[in-house]
Structures are given as structure tokens and as C-alpha cells.
Image (tube, rainbow, N blue to C red):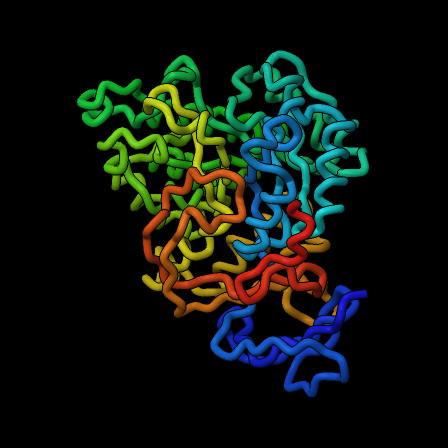
Length: 437
């Protein structure tokens, strides 16, 4: 049993101050409180209290690439970033396409105990896009998988995608689609197609390669009456399709990453592989459209697409370097700087797009993304909204260092994270550190 914690004077979602008593894994009292004997007191004067953050799109690399990340180090990065739950993508080695692998990921995450690690199951066996994976067995497993994705690869076959949607309807599952038509942007494509890709001599990745898959999938969702989730939306055209689909009552949700909200193709002029991601960074007009879509609710959530890589995979010429960048520890600060300090989103909105909505989409709403009320699970993130932080890639809890934010300054930072009432991050330290060894 963890020591009771009194969070004193927090501003709940930026809507009013109160004390919260965390005890036995739940919020047991709320108001102006006197701490019981033996209670740990956390001074939250000037801090915002949010439901613990939830990331629907995380790469933890274990099993198979423990040189880049482990479930323990990724969970530590999550805790430092304010996350109490993360969804671990299936592109591991072996691929998480069966009950045995997803249960292994689930069990390691629970043993580490720094964040609830919820496995994402592969849609197709081996991510090969040919045969459906063991969807039902993963859904009925101890891990209770509800999100499925071949992320990094598109489920290109429309018939297979339809079958997967139909199959998952009985389990309340959802497919998170990596939207990339490989006939328009194959595996070598690495730069937004346009003047810059031509000038740099980099293979082009046109926005339409994303948009045609988004359009196909929302029509399949309408036909089957099931849900579909669009991962890492990157273009204004995709937003138009998603906005239309929602107006028609189609069950589509969408995510955007901090890097697609903040960075543009201009970063690529120096051929720095830190900025190589899939889908690629887009021009300013797309970035502007993404910010507006997050603000108006067309895009439902922020997801990090945290993608750690060992140096021997990332430090190459741009065209052959691995896709992806770190994101767990910096996501809240980036979104605070872009969306809160500019007045586009309130802190209540941040709770919605970074906690409540991702928990609902992923099927974790019974435990995560809950209101800060008596009787609810004590998954809480404290944020200092005025603290200015300068990102230091060398201080990351992640094993990898492919951090595009190094040296950048942001306003807003995570102060503390509580998982079921127990501090996992407090005063700049992740607890318990021994789990990382």
C-alpha cells in the first residue's frame, strides 16, 4: 500500500483550486483538506492538475530492439512526460501479432509499474499485409487488446482492411491506420514532394498518398459501421476528408503528433536525419491547418509517435537513416507552447486531447482519462504552466538520443505524475529508479 498523498492547492484543469487526497489508488477527498498523519504533501501552488496523460501511439521496441528502448526505459520517459498509460505499437521483433507477444509486453509493463503499457496488436501477421493476425486471440488475451495497427506499414489491401474492421466490431476494437499508398509513396519516400524534395534530391512523399488511404478507410468505416482511427495526420487534405466524414456521422477519429504541429519541411534543408519521420514533415500551410483542426476538434487527440532509434540506425545519410524521433518527455511542453500559450486550447482542452479522448479511443477509459473527482482512479499529472524549459537530449530517460527538440525552449512543463496515487515522477526524478537497471 502506497503512502497517502495530499496534493495541495492545485488548479483543476485550470478551472478552480482544490486539494486532492490520493489514497488506496483513488481520489478519496477533494476540497480544502487537512492532511492525515503520515501523508506525503505535494505543494501544487501555481500548478495545473490534469488526468494522467495517455499516449495512443508509442514505440517501446521491446521485444527485439532493446538497444534502442526497453519497456522500462520507455515507461520512465512516459512518466517524466506526464503519461500514466501508453499504447505500445506492434512493430517489434517478434511482431506483436499473437496473444503470447502482447501478453509478454503487457506483463513487463505491469511489472515495471511506471505507466500502464497497453499493447497494440498487429492487423496482419508479421505486418506483411497478406493475412490477418490473431485478432480475436489478442482481444481475448490477458492484455485485452483493443487497438490494432501495422504502423510503419499501411494495410493496403482494401478487402483485408474491411475484413479486419468487420472482425473487430464484436470486440469494440479499432484499427489505427498508417495511411500511405505505396504506389504513390514507396518505402524510399522521405521528403514532402515539392520544390524542396527536388532541390535536395530526396524521394518525394506527396500528401495525396496519405489522403487517398484516409478517404478509402472512412468509406470502409461507413460501409461496415465500425470505427477507424487515422494515425499521425499530416496534411490539410486529410483534414478535409476527416471533417467531411465526421459530418456524415462516420466513426472516424484522428491524431496529430507534436512534431507535425511544430516543425515544417524547412528543417530538412540541412539533411539532418533527426527530422526524418514517416509521414514526413510538411509545409507551413499543412502545419497551420493541423493546428486549426486540433483547436476545432476535427483532430481528436495528440499522440507522440515516440520512435527511439539506436545511433547506428539514425546517424546515416538522410535517405537511409531510420524514420522517427523521440516524443514522450517533450510532448506536453511542445503542445503547451504551441496551443495553450497562444490561446488556441485551454488546459481543459489539453486534458481532453491528451488524456480523456485517447483513453476512450483505446478502451482504457475505465482507468484513465477520468474526471478529477472523489472515487476516481488517482492517475494525475501536475503541470507548471509558466516554467520555461530548455530541452537537453542528453538528460533523457530514453535509451536513444534522436531528439529533435534539443536546445529549444518551451513554456510549460510536467512537475509530477501519479499512477494510482503513487508518484512515478516528482521533483525531476522517476521512481523507482531500480526498475531501469
